[in-house]
Length: 385
Image (cartoon, rainbow, N blue to C red; front, side):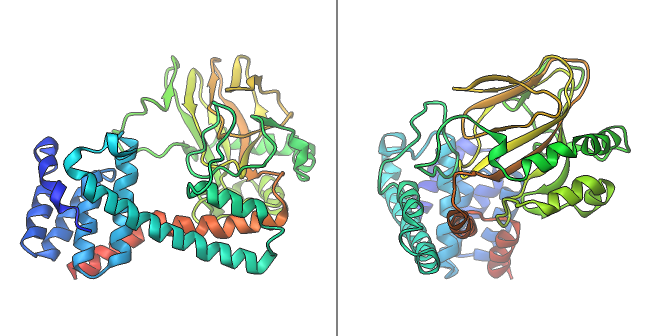
């Protein structure tokens, strides 16, 4: 299903993207290598370009890479929807509707196949009875059944798992390992303060390109509003040097059950909210994971606000656990940094079998949906080489 039929009308509206014009012209001339080169440049500078991904889909299809073509168009759909297009036919310009309908059908068909294969795998491993809620959650994810959060404040960006205990806050002691961290609070805090006063090991918790605005993410009246972190794990990757710098914290983290999903979790860090910083309201990705905080350094007037649950003032040594798929924000109105040990963790209301199944399914879906750098370079090289 070619999308070049609707690529041309948007070129003048995207006049800064000369690479898109070049890619489209090269594709129409059958010069796939030239099209791939232009798209590499375009998507390096404009990774959210809806039509860049769509034209890449056309290029991949002409190169015989059908599955990758669908994945590229799926990226285009996602970015378009975030910009307000393609939510339905009313938000899709009339000349493009037949093409978009075909793209959606292709994307959904491949996604359904991916989820179906995953469900067969977990059903064979754990049995139908243990997987009842998992099957229902996947049917809700695919839109085959309507089962969304009851709270207007809850909106997972990726996956909603129906049937779990509801509410923005959950008791930290539902995690068997919480008491172990609380008992070691003094030692963990000492290592966090050593990092804070150390040699610049902190980095931004948020991933921004140089010069990219933090508007909509961070605000505040401090001298340098920032949300910084000292990562032990990020997107599932272990930061070995940071573990070595904090041996007590590291040994504790290595001794507990972690939420492990390839390319995504665990996410564990010393989270540092700098003076006068406001983390703007936002939603998390899935309620199969919760967020756990062990407060280590908390000046006055530092608050977590979870919509539907109210404000929570952190207290040193007293953990809090919340569902970040509820709209939430945080601020530090003091003149000193606020530090918590932050980690994502399995929702304790999932059974062990459900956790294993969720991991399998999310990794399969992510492998299909995420056109990460290695995949992108692989397909570009296949065309350009």
